Amino acid sequence: MAEVHNSGILLESGTNEIEIMEFTIDGNLYGINVAKVREIIMSAPVKRMPHAHPAVEGIFKPRDIVITVVDLPKYLGVEMEKMEKDLFIVTNFNKMFIAFRVHTVVGISRISWTDIHKPDKTVSGGSEGVATGIAQCGKDLVTILDFERIVAEIAPETSIQMDEIEQMGPRARSDEPIWIAEDSILLSKMIEECLRKAGYVNLRMFPNGQELWEALNELPKAHDLFSDVALVITDIEMPQMDGHRLTKLIKDNARFKEVPLIIFSSLISEEMRIKGRQLGADEQMSKPEIGRLVDVMDHLLKEKRK
Image (cartoon, rainbow, N blue to C red; front, side, top):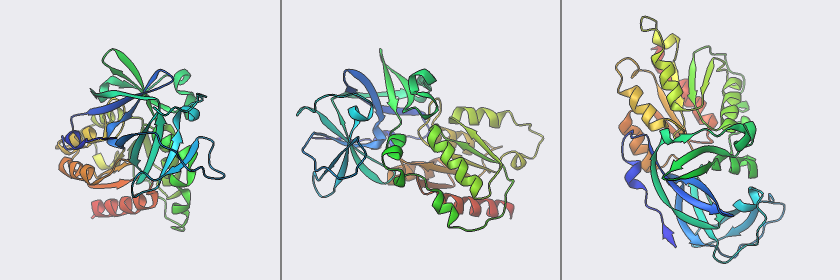
């Protein structure tokens, strides 16, 4: 059993770096953000659950918490016999603990987000692909999997829910320009649909922090900034430029620092909150709390108008 300690990188401000844990399935290299990983343990017997997704092996209780086990090889279409030497990567994101079966763990590489590129659609599986990036880790190319998308497919009830918006009842339309950086195509669509349902119809979506930052700098300087961008929402994990680096750049810039900024990420933890506060984020919250996101947007925009 190996516990993963990652607080060091979490508390470094805006370095635009990531630590990737590399693992193998059927000899192929894949990766996961170390910030999502809590520990690595030897695979163990699991209790099967009726009517579960085909890729869900069942549940087990390593200590004082029941954890769902996902057969990642099976999810990826690899039909192989389970082996005693298989490993469970125990993750924690979206306020959930989930274990993913893998074959081996290779190690950890620390790289820049600029070394992670969006995969071609023929590799990622099109608009609904499960590969969120291709990373150059030393001499190896590593496929970064979209674990949020995997969990959203296996258990849709744990992801962003339109019901939270519908329960708010009728809402006024807002034309204030909202800029959103989110690399997951699936989650980007969900967020956009929910915010439009909540009345926020002037949305501009970006696949990473780099493109949002470049767009900010292209705005005419003599123009009213808030008529172009009234609020920024950013994920943390994104190729090219992560949300923490984007937050630092915006809040350290005399021209942009007054623009309200919300970090909306599956990685929000107490350590991440400390880092976000250090970087100047106005608010931080965990996916999939879309209803709370709308409430915070309402509040920040109301304060800005005063």
